[in-house]
Image (cartoon, rainbow, N blue to C red):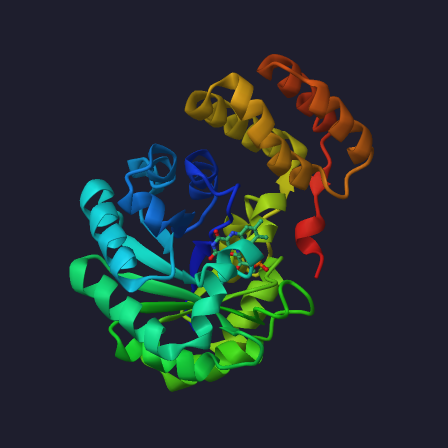
Length: 321
Ligand SMILES: Cc1cc2nc3c(=O)[nH]c(=O)nc-3n(C[C@H](O)[C@H](O)[C@H](O)COP(=O)(O)O)c2cc1C
């Protein structure tokens, strides 16, 4: 039946250049940037532009733009394509956060297929690279098929679907029936996303829905090696197990990349969130978290992490689910 393409989901505040390099080392096929404000790009704001930065090791990479106005989205896409030459551009039509939907962007776009069509058409007209659109299944009810058809018809090359409505936020489980339904009714490749936490679930979703790609978000923070593990499972029938030594190696590399990227002071703050995710479910994780929050240098941080990942335990959470 072949293999799905494995994709790192955009995760605002996490999937920056250093994180993407880590998952690239662990089997991911394509990475997405976190969402980038189209208005900030057009205004040439340094901080916004810095979110579009990536290195060649991260390719293939899609840069994700969000916004509410088609002209601004078009101009931002054109600037980003020219300045950074990403392998693709993605339009965010799924962000449920109040501040974003209040401005008419993210999932708010799903309420109006006229604006969906307009944005896709205009962005597509100014870029040469592939265009993907990442949606939720609708605003307060499932409109995924109707929206997907508009997106396909307007010229997008790929559609990524997180099958929850905006109203659902992250409650309930993602409805994979939506993925199967859309996949069977449109021609462009469909990427399925939502609640994939293990190699078993990846295979179940792939076989059930026939999606072309599987996009993983939160589970990649707890298990950045999940993509390698999924590939191993598809190829050999058993997931790849990772021992503590390897997990320490991953987090050490990540901290080092972040220190180079942001400078040590900022990196120590930034990496905490991801480290907490990695420690989730481990013994003493609360105490270790408190220790990490007091640390003010990289050497001390790595010493704590070395201690926590010192036994030769195998990380078996990959076997759950
Ligand atoms: C902390 C966080 C940040 C997110 N940031 C983005 C984002 O910038 N752009 C986007 O399209 N989706 C974003 N999402 C949604 C994810 O890409 C994904 O669709 C969702 O988490 C469901 O997939 P999962 O169950 O594999 O995590 C974010 C989700 C979380 C939890």
